Amino acid sequence: MSMWIRTIALSIITIWLVGCSSAAQRQLAQDAVTAMGGAEKLMGIQSLIMSGGTGTRTKVGQAKTATGMDQVGQLSNVVETLDFGDARAAFDYDLKVGDFVQHRHEVLTKYPAGAAGKPIGIESIENVTFATTPSGLFSWGTQNSPEWLLKRNAVSIALAASDSASTADAAQDKELDGRMMKYGKGKTHDGEDMGLYFDPETKLLAGFEVLDTETMLGDVDALYILSDYKDVSGVKIPHHIKIRKGGEDFSEVQFASIVANDPKAADVFAIPDLLKQQAETAAKEPDAFPMQLVKVANGVYQARAFRHHSMVVEFPTFVAVVEAPYLDTQTRMLAKAIAAQFPDKPIKYAAVTHFHYDHIGGVRAMAAQGATILVAKDQEPALRKVLEAKHTHPPDDLAKAGDKAGKIETFEGMKEIKEGGQTLQLHTFTGSPHVEPMVMAYVPNGRVLFQSDLWFPMVGAPASPEVVQLMESIQKANLKVDTMVGGHGLVGPYAEMTKAVAALKK
Ligand SMILES: [Zn+2]
Image: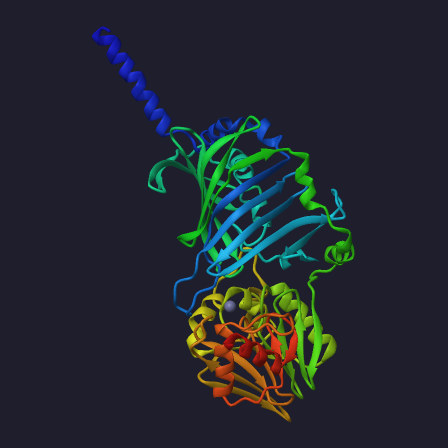
């Protein structure tokens, strides 16, 4: 090659490189869609079944102490199904957190099926299933609700980016997970701002960042890192999805296989016959969730929901609730049940037994009802984090409540609420293998004791070290108990528990 040809060639390469690094963001987004197989093919994807997933889910809210490290959940047999055509999505997975193992199945579907259908949720755990409003779905999957799959998947985001990224602004260089990427900005199909990372080598969408309003964490900057793109019916789909929220790991799953447009995808969205009636209600009501007040003693009720229950104590001019579990939807159903049974009696207090997310998921809605949230001093940091989190996108009940919202009130040792002839005592105790500290609630009228996660009344549960420690704590507090009310399980005699403990010690 002669000198001047080489010079020209180098100049062309230089111009090409400069041109490349200053490519408009829109061009990069369109290149990403092309690299995935083209807009037409991507828009032709009606459904995806992503299966054989294994990975982790953090932020399960199962820390041992209020300021301690959370546990990490292990996900396996993960199947995520997306139906773009009908805006339906489903999670099916096994979760392991420490010794706790559970198979969960959470579905966002429509009732009735088809374009005219209204969104509803179906949740199944160990053969128990119910239909709810979509906000009643609780998840420990890769996200807090299958709804997020529709909003945050690579196909929708790539298509939205190619429609919205700037045609004038040049891309910047920005690091993603240790690699330098091309970075631009765009909007989701719902109009949310997002940051976009493009792989300069493969041209594929390597990741995106967007504001997520999490059930428990509130507003967090979320980063989705997409990798292991593999061919799926002529398009390239990422098989590895890592999600970071608020600068910390949230979930990471490697899928073994993904198929597109498999007619079997529809099967997971079918509504079983036994749920038809619940589904109909869920499609009609603003909130639909199992809820029943079961009388335990005079003025004492177990508020029985799906698997997480509360205790309601009636006073002459108000009611107190012990535990606001699961989600805000359950709390709203509880508030409705209380208003129906005790008209004119506000929920003045809502007590917390411990700060595990599945037991405080409805606490924000309780504060929104105006209830003072009663918390043991050593549990306060965990509760403040949840109650003081910003929820803007969309705002939840508490974000909308303004000055009417109830505040946190802390106590040490024992807290007593008394009015007329009714008393509710909250006893803090330490040394439980489950969490530190724990609170049990005692109503002297009727000699009723409520606790969560330690003893499961009337379901045939065996005793465990947690139960032994609970019994010792009851004795230490000198409480005379006849009836046990479970945050899980039903209502049963105290003797059921002492027998189980005696059997364990044999
Ligand atoms: Zn717990």
